[in-house]
View: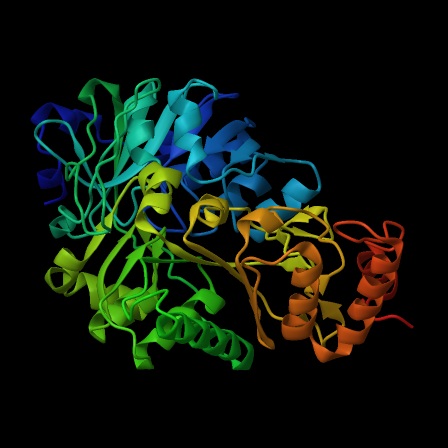
Length: 497
């Protein structure tokens, strides 16, 4: 039954075990792997490589679409098998190795990795490990629950190992839209003018002569961790929905808004879930990840179409989608991430982008990746692709945390991922600041008034007023700008004595 998924008879001789596949890797190789936010990733070959590295030490550079599931990044890091990792990760073990300097991490905009490979600004991929549902008679491959950078890896890698996952129904074929833009110069316009436009093919082209091994698997993606909306995330969602309602009243938007993009996590999930009981309708999405809330909105009749690069959902939602795939087939599409995240399309479609911040400062600069300016959390992901090019760039965070001893609005962010020039709206559980058309001194007043936790409002206003006395277009007290972070490190709180 499994062999029926390999429609080229001569490739049946390429079937090997994961342990045998792991032996194909050599020290210093550049490895590309499918996988985007724990979806469509290598289930057995990369874990087998981690096991091998414990006995037979080697190090690789690992490039993926985004994060891997099943703790694979952590297994590779713990085994000492990673020298360099890009462009995104969420694994605690790997994060600790990165922050300790044991693994080098390149934090990239998710639209850029494929471009750098095509432009030969990164080393060539030696081996690509790609999860597929089937191999077609023309050698092309049917992706599973993500596309990510798989099309680029298939085109550019010297060798390819395929994981044929029999847990994925072959009926998944058709939800993908595989399009690769030409290399520079004289690249053609990507002809997408609405999220529902499909412009490519259903499968990823692959030269069968590159295939050095085929491994059968039968394992589902790691389920997404879906947290129920809490008081803070519900408040943030209400502020955003109220803002949209006002934009409709002003005639800036219709009740269908513009295509939506939302980062992953409980805040984004709460915001999108909030649309279910709103007056908004005929919504569309042009994003990176289809989450539980995406399918909830489709089921509620609120969302007409959603485009992304992966499906990352809870166990319950996974069954709901793949047991009734025909219900959703004409409402979703998965694309390569250098299409889903390409700046020109984001600008053309007028995306409303909603992403999460770790902290932001009184002038609207956003830190979405580092704690105290030093230790990386996950990575910038696609937030930069969308923030700089969106019709509306919205960043959200809780106003304070850890028993309200940490303020997420500070005098100056300890690391800058998104400058004030790319940020339109800031939202916390206490309120929303619309920064459009405001000069720095105006932005500071609106942010402090609307977004800051009450325990920190006077402290932040005092900083701002004293900075204004010194003067400047963007007033700061450099000797105090990071004092809140220093106080947190030394005393466990950002509050003044």
